[in-house]
Length: 346
Image (cartoon, rainbow, N blue to C red):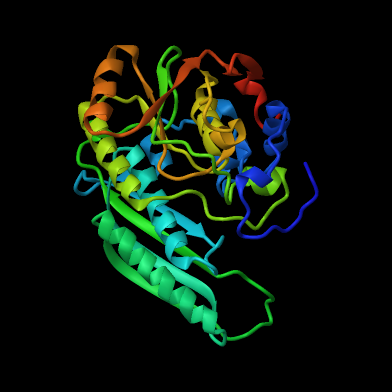
């Protein structure tokens, strides 16, 4: 891991050297507390989480719960961001809402309403008002695209400097409902031999990624690649796939990029994955970039033809990654070991 440095916002991927050894990248990122598999599931619990104690196929673990009085199932998720909120508040807020909606849809819930809280805005700084204006525009634009109601939005201005520099931050809480319990989908791989697909298109982008900041030591970079129209299309195809029950699991590509999304899906049941990267995309961008608009799903082989037909008919790009293994992790025919050795506890 290299020394921490600052870099201009106009940084491009061509200015970042591509690592020769992917294994070195993987094991360097494993100690990043934002990506550690154990810490990812630990939340605020004081209990030590082990692979054996994880029950991620329980809908309650995904923020989905049932109201005892009515039997109706609801979903809730909370996301926050401060990165780039000062220089591009509109896009940063659109990305935040898109992430929340994409995560909820992966589990088969239908997003319905959003509450937003913007805070640590400097009242005396003219840029503070620009941030508030941009965040408001981003929130309204994203909710308009996704047909979401804005139930509440608040802003907290800071009048005092005694606490030192604190970056402006926005938090969104999203509420959704479950149309049918049969449509609920886990985020966990459960069966060796299932085929793994990525819905969406990868791009040569590592902007604002954990990989760029933690491994290369560059904390200032552009926002990850994002197109809100693509997000709408991804949401549409997810609804159809859930209705037709064509996918076994679904996960948004998030922190740590594709590799850590796959690892989080494989880890609870000690399964693994054997994938092939896209020859047209840099391998570090393909595996660790955090560009938006991508979903990882696993599909039973007997459902594959119908799955492919749905995506083809809806003109949604996809990429056949590989398959679920008994526990080994392989990338481009190179073994990276086994899932049970890929946690901070080992």
